[in-house]
Image 1 (tube, one colour):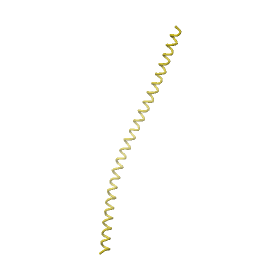
Image 2 (cartoon, one colour; image 1 turned 135 degrees about the horizontal axis):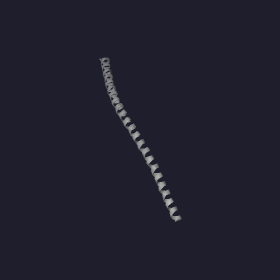
Image 3 (cartoon, rainbow, N blue to C red; image 1 turned 180 degrees about the vertical axis):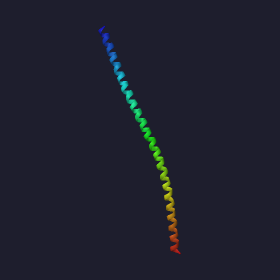
Image 4 (cartoon, one colour; image 1 turned 120 degrees about the vertical axis):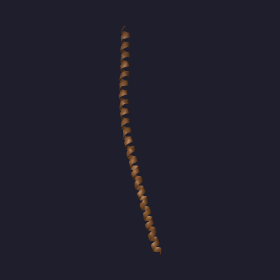
Length: 84
């Protein structure tokens, strides 16, 4: 009888340990889910910001290309004046 009580107590103890480990794992899992969600939001924000920056850089690049072309045209005109 005593052996049966000890076995039952050990079984409950092992079961309690498993439940405790499960609770810890579930808490860790929830923490990881929160981290993933936060990181996904940061990634989405960064992507949006990068798209806006890319658009602005493309516009600046076009303006710079136009200015370079204007300078080439001016250089060509100066060269023609000096050579005539």
